[in-house]
Image (cartoon, rainbow, N blue to C red):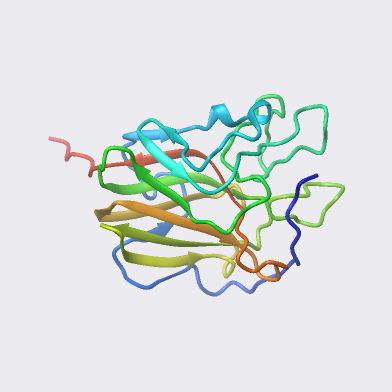
Length: 218
């Protein structure tokens, strides 16, 4: 199985997220960042039948979601245990999500294809790090963390880290909100103790993007 190995680290819970600037904030539950969905990506074309699809130039609903490498969602229902980076019930015959096979060293970049600014993003968070549990759910490690940056005109305006203190459980709805908007959101999911420290293994599904504030109700 083409997997990513790690050393399990159990962290103490002290800090939610560190931000270099206060412009963009990271959130952790559905509706905490996106209040009006303008664009979305479900990645249905990246199921196990289409493993190996390039995601370096992946687009859906006028969104670019790019990172180096090819997609991998699993080996299908005939090859248990299923690759489930979210730890939620999934149909192995239809599962489809965004994940770079074997991980990479690249940022995952989210931006619009028509230069529209983004004010909010939410998605189902997971990762391809091993849990070490060969008899249960062997992938999707709660001890991983997400580094992130938001950029305008190629310049970093905000950055930070979510997890592992406190833990960032897979299956969390991870969000980013900035009332001033940003051109790009860049993310990496890494884990302490990795043999290759710079390797990242972010998985996501059900991406939702908001482009403007919800108009006030009369």
